[in-house]
Image (tube, rainbow, N blue to C red):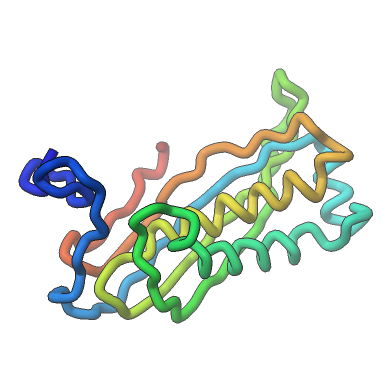
Length: 171
């Protein structure tokens, strides 16, 4: 395994290494990631009406996502510690009707992370969306253990050598 073969996190002899970004210019970079949480309609109603005993689920999930983005380098091996300039999470419900598993509502979590640095923030955005989704599960599991956290994915990124990436609409 070598960096010449596309494996930038390994030396010629196969040992893990953090990529050296010291020669790269700092540029504006942004990433948007998404996670979805499918749940029962009763769980959706409890969240919307702030009837979950643990508190305001959406506010706590937003805070958890922001905190997670800031801790990404501590969670993902070989991930750079990136100075974040902005982290925002948008949580919205989508009605999907009755499904065969009885999970009728979907909470869509989108996390946007911005920086001006030498490496991108895709992992920070993905971590923020994931942890926000897990926080929703944790706060609501007494009401709905059948919730499903799914489709954690990168929607958009811009900046750096590879430029713009945008997920196709139907992924």
